[in-house]
Length: 342
Image (tube, rainbow, N blue to C red):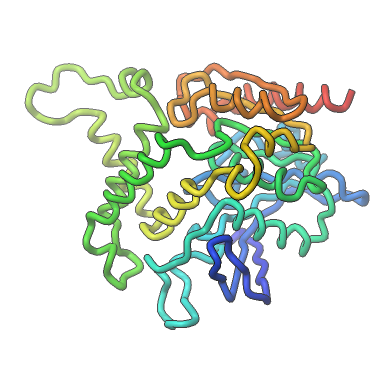
């Protein structure tokens, strides 16, 4: 059963790169109830290959009595444009060709996503967001929204992310795109094109989401001789196959370009000045073993946002810790909200 709600935007949606999407559709889900004052909204921003069902991919975070308490808050998560979970994306029909967009889908930036979700926010008559929260590229969105629409955001929780995509990030994204495009079916007119390349790209990405310590402890073998039956090989293959069952190569490439686009200083002042103008009360959370976004990148963000709080969480799960360390995140966010209320 499709749990999404859908908003169809009747006007052309202008993109930062200069083109437009004529028939924009935004998928979203929500939990809890909007109160009379409309001051209890929590907006969850999802990461790379996730969807609007944040209660599913962020276990232990959304529900009665949890951090994002549905007895107290109206919690909402909207699917990113360019994804494949309900919002307009590469598998949709290009009205100019009457065929799926596929590899020709326009490049989407983080600012485009924020503008799209701001439109949804207005459609839902949400005047204020009590807290916006996201990890990884979800935090890209939370940060940009706090910059682009500062009057909208009261509190921001920024987890395992950065003020701009680093050369290290972009190089990894390009390596994954090369893997996808090495699959010749990516250039076919088939919605299932590029899936073998996507498997390889996902296997590459996983190495950056975890670290050597994690792999060496969870995928350790005994003596397998020359059989080749290594746990690490099985794990990489399994994760690649798991993704292609739910995702497509064209959305994956689209999300990788969105990732690359993140730079809060683009066509603005310096990054430090942009961070210094943020009005939202901010909590920055770092994961001590994160290789994709090392803790010093979160320290930089916290240093330049006025009165921001910084917390470092210890985890053996590296970057994926933001999806797993629910208890630690709950503890530090609750402390932050209590401090901001006093």
